[in-house]
Structure formats: C-alpha cells, structure tokens
Amino acid sequence: MTMKFNALSTGSVALMMLASAALLPSCSKSGQQMPQGQAPAIATITLSPENADLQTTFPATIKGKTDIDIRPQVTGFITKVHVDEGQRVRKGQVLFTLDQVQFNAAVDQARAAVNSAQTAVNTQQLTVDNKKALLDKNIISDYEYQMALNSLSQAKAQLANAKAALVTAQKNLAYTTVTSPSDGVVGTIPNREGSLASPSSAQPLTTVSENSQVYAYFSLTEKDLLNLVGEGERTVEAAIKSMPEVSLRLSDGTMYPLTGKVATVSGVIDNNTGSSSVRALFANPQGVLRSGGTGQIIMPNLKENVIVIPQKATFELQDRRFVYVVNDSNKVASTPIVIDPVNDGKNFVVLSGLKAGDRIAVEGVGTKLSDGMTINPVAPQAAPAADQAPAQAEAQK
Image 1 (cartoon, rainbow, N blue to C red):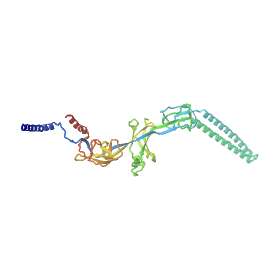
Image 2 (image 1 turned 30 degrees about the horizontal axis):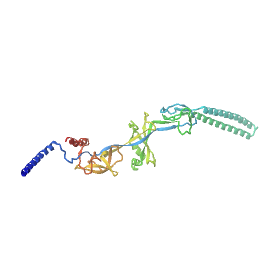
Image 3 (image 1 turned 90 degrees about the vertical axis):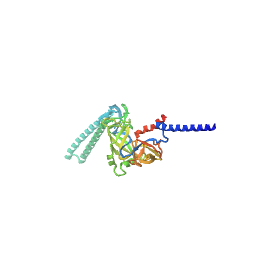
Image 4 (image 1 turned 60 degrees about the vertical axis):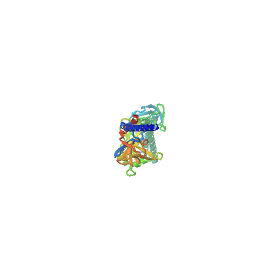
C-alpha cells in the first residue's frame, strides 16, 4: 500500500507541474502580470541652443517728475483754499489765499512814506536852487551851498528807502496769494481755512506733482553696475544709452501700457545697502501713475544661442546645482552645472556643464531619480500617460 501511495503522489505532482506550465504562457499573453523591476517612464528633453528672453524685476517707487512742496513766503492765516486734493492745476493757478489785512495796511503805510519822502526831496530841491542863485551873486558862501546839496542827497536817499519798503510791502501782499509753480496734481491739504501758515512750518500747505511724466526709482547692486559697464569696458553714460526699454508692473499686478527708459544711475553706492539708485522715466499722459505709488521695474535681458533648461530639472547639493544627464544606455548621471544668476523664475540659462545634444531628465528630480538609475525616456507631454500605465495594470489584476 505504501508503494501504491507513492506512485499516486508522483503522478499527481506531474499533473500539477504540467498544469502550471500551461497556465504560465496564458498569463503572459493575457498581460495580467508586469515584469519585475520595470524602468520608470521619465520625461526628458534634448538640449539645443536657443534665444532666451529673460526678465529681471526690481521693486520701484514712483515719483512725479517734479514734486514741489508749496510753502507760503509770509506768515498769515489761511482765508481761502481754492483747490481740492487730487485736482489738476495749471502753472500760476491760485491755490491758497492768506489774510491780507495787515499786508494791505503795510502797503498803504509804505506808500505814504514814499509820498512824504518825495515831498522832502522836492522841498530840498527848491532850497538848493535858491542857494545856487545866491551863490552866483556871492551873497552866500560855497560852504552853505554844499550843505544844501548834501541835504538834498539825504532826502533822495530817504526817498529811495521808502520806495524799496513799498516794493517789499507790495511783494508781501502778493505772497498772500499762493499760486502753483507748475502744472500738476494737488496732493494732500493738511491745513484749511483759519489755520496759521508760515514759511518755517515743518509741513507744507500741499505738494504739487507734475506727473505728465514720472520717475520710477529702483536699485542696482554693485555687481549689477559692474556688469552694466562691462567691467570698465564702457562708461555708465554709454551703458545707459544702450539699455533696452523697461516695463512697469503696477501694484495690482497689471502692466502699465507704456514702456520707459532708464534715465540716470546714481554715482554713489549706499554703504548700508550696497546698491545705487536708478531712475527710469515714463510718460504719463492719462495721469494713471501717481507720485508715491509703487510697482516693479521689469528689465529685459535677451541672450542669444544659449542652453536653456527648466528650473524643475535641477536640484541643489552643497551650494552647487545639478541635473540628471541621460546617457545612451538610458542611465541617469548627476552632473554639476553653472547657471546665469539672471532668470525668469521658470528657466535657467546654463553657462557651463551642458552642451547641445545632451539629454536631461525634466521630471522626477528629487523624488524618483537617483544617480545611475535606468529610466524609460519619454517626451514631456507623454510622461503623465506613461506614469499611469503601471498603476492601471496593477488595478486590472
């Protein structure tokens, strides 16, 4: 019985092995099982020279071409405010009127002093004429005649002083009418009717901003300035002339429709910030830009025939930047690169480490890839579908 049991067992095992051999091809053909260790599908690109239109942004402060603080030239109480905040005014337009009573009185007093001095001159002139006639007849001495001439000169001097005082009084009276020195827009008006205005006041009556053109102030670092002049190969003036037109992004994120031009670069570098002030000029015909506003200067930076790669294709290690280069065997190798510090936030311009014709991985950097790993290179647009294939196959099991 024992021998019969062993023979039966051997036959059963043989039948099971034949059934397994028959099932294996069937499973393979039906695609229900995935090979172990399949290479992941990773998007790659082949590098070629191209033109890169990079942009550099700088925080900017907007100021009118002329921001003039309006201050009175005499002390007096404000009796009339003729304009309102934000109002556009013309050169010579009346802005404020100060109390004129005391200044009118001063003019009347100065005018009376002129009349008095003129009368004194006329009287002394008659005396001199009379003395001259007596001198010609040898009735009086030459000394007496010279004394009369001196008195006439003194009276004329007093007349001149009186006239100068009258001019000063008239000017002071005119200063009680405060006018705009230029075309522009009225700023805040902190003082109203009844307030005392004085030339020594810390706060101006208002500010008139001539904003048909505005300046956008921003800063360049010392390194930026050296790059601007090409390490001394050209002057700052020549560099400014060769600079492209710049754009302005407003505080709400919209772009100002008109471009501007860099006008000046300060000749002094601030020791505290290590930067120099730069001024760009923008036309402002519609008055959209207001003095005191903020925005961002966008400076274009066109580079021709350079290697450009996506920033997501790189990773940093110990202050160095790397990419995964794919070789002919589809293995990735981490490769150090040097990039241009100027970038648009999405791409890097590679200065060294890569060349035209190299393939690099543009996905999975920092998550899926490791040095020496074998991948299945796919086009970037095909990468999502390829990554989903293993998951779909697993779901079908």
